Length: 356
Figure: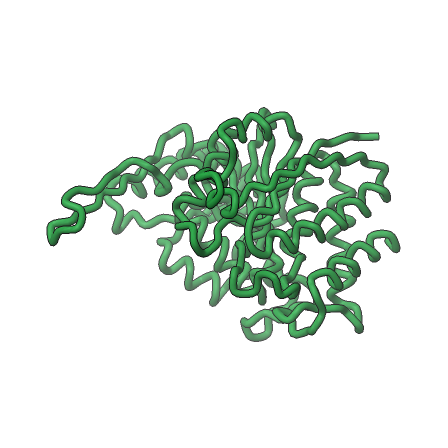
């Protein structure tokens, strides 16, 4: 029996509602596949910040370090500025544990209608690989003349060859496992004078190591348009931190609902725990109503199991999700056009796991 220690951080808003559903499905799949999962629960959130002035304790990263993976719900809630909540929890975890790949699947699931005309499952099925530790998300910069008419802000972007190359190379390695073996680079070298020409140069250099892979590149503005107009052309899209963040929300948007989208913050070498979370965030507008869609959290559990080496178990979760979504009496949450609760949909997927 394989054993794994999972750090569980429900966080804020609907994170507290969807994480229990993710654990429900994980427990079902563990029983089915003879896997032992032990959970270490951490109540770190914006409420923690309000009480203590910190999103997590000073030794929070050390508490997480000995786990095999981190299962996160959401970060952020009104009353705590976003730059404090994210830089107090999510971003330190990503950087301390070298989770330099943010991997997000963009897939139109059976039973969900895309807002794009005539698109069916199979038409939209690609990956966004986001560089997750540097780029535009930097603390380097500052302000001068605050509160005056001369107030000015400087925000620096940091692109290193080491950080850029490892993200781009991961994208090419991922593409080798797909049918298309195609990598698209997101750039903006006509507007960003230093960083994006550097990105383009490194992309071309890494691409030369993969002669069997097809490549193209788009400026980020037209690439966003192509996501809407021709999503079926993409296979693996690699982008800097900011561009990848935007594209990996837009991608799930064209599949019908961002609520089903998962995300993996990966340390590919497995020297540190990787972190798995839904894309949707804390959604304070519906927090506490019990109507949040738990599929993004549950799908992220599937990605977590696959990363841990339990590929069959991860695939079984996806089978269960798709079976429930296509059932005639599917208990769908309001974002999918139904009236079911978060718990109803989670129960249905867990029950389907046992029926597989």
